[in-house]
Length: 307
Image (cartoon, rainbow, N blue to C red; front, side, top):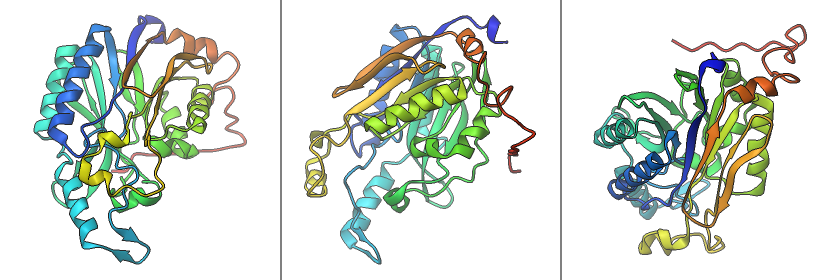
């Protein structure tokens, strides 16, 4: 029950990955987990596909109806720096989660071990050092579909934890009302929203979700500049690409839309805020998306986990 869960700290880590280098990025994740541990964080969230970085501004040699050999080589390089789940990288992160006594949630590019398809995935590690959940993005956006396949939706589930009900969606999945409703119907309390979007409109989206779902929202993005790209890839960026591919914007928001930490732009950072689930009950006095404000006599929504 919410009233029996004591307030706890949660952190979002605005990290610059070591671009296209999974080994060094994983090592960096370990260092930031240890830093968040010093802040007594019980939930630590990392950005969308922080392993091996979100390839903003790279076109992989594609045009409508055409691909290039050079683009296929770039895709191979990205594929080689994706991770298998489970694998040695997930074993390391699981160990660090146990050492930190925290839930650690990391966005990765996952390489399917049978089909070789890549997925934009969100991995959940428990304080017991176990990989306890994986969510694959159900709809990559626009040119992302060159890189990542579609998840099948069977993993749109909320985890019951000693810290409350925890779950989330990746980047523009959060613009899908029915995907959000799927989580709300499971009683979601701590909503994780890793992203690659640093625009002002994204801040408005996260605030809306907090107010709509009457939940705590943890928004987490990468900090990425041109200088973070390897020199050879820097030359392949789109000519009109901005000098700051991702300025950040990580933030933590309470269930009435009040910003608790951040947003932070222009640097790497750890943002930490206290999560008191009793605030959710207060917020539901006048609005509950699945309760007294739902109007099931007018609207119906059903979702069942596919077998």
